[in-house]
Image (cartoon, rainbow, N blue to C red; front, side):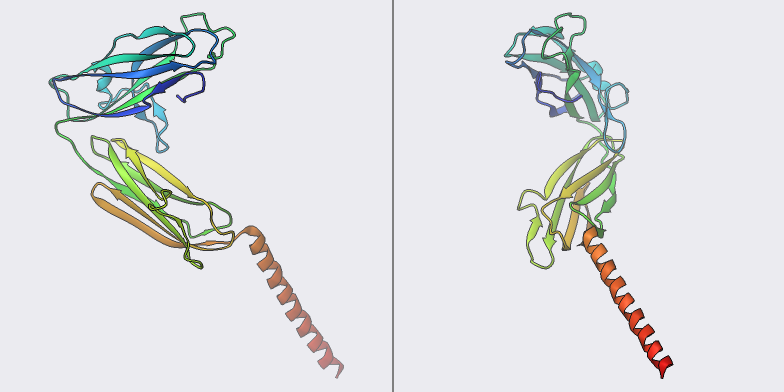
Length: 284
């Protein structure tokens, strides 16, 4: 469900808070670009949203206890037409039941071309699959905040840029959580700061869905070709901090080969010297 240059939907995601027994109105904006040559017939519908694995591939078919909100949504104009360069607000209502459970609820408002129409032959929108606006809802009530950082990885050695730090974060609670990740990388020899929160390239946040584990990775670029970089990764999650810090040796393959050749040359010279010394002794 990736966006393309044929049509767009905003917002791509929305964080909301809901109370049982109350009603809420929202909308998504759909735009048919000026380079379209025909009208864009769309359909809009609500689908359950979850993640399928640690890489967080989207799943918009599986129903769970955290996708009940799919049945609470009414889209007021589920089908329509947009002319080239036209933008439309598609409104929808969320009616939260009185007995709605506390915790996270997740839905994708999906906009796609209406395949029941036949207006797409030789048009610039015929490549579209679908685009989703994802709702991350917290329903007030009993919420469980549980989860931890399972892995916090910084490599110790690499032969080429970039440095890739990673983590595996689990959420065993019933509502989404935010993991704040801060990376600091410093050139040990020059003292230069390569990545940090102050440089805006070392701090970011990751949303962790309930009943899931997420693999997170970040690349650190603009490194020396050869040297040592001190890398520290702090993960602030569920009131705790996980820290990993290492000096990462960056040693490219060409340098390793050079060292190997140098060692071989030294060994060969030593062997030759020993052999010559033995020949001289034998000649005496």
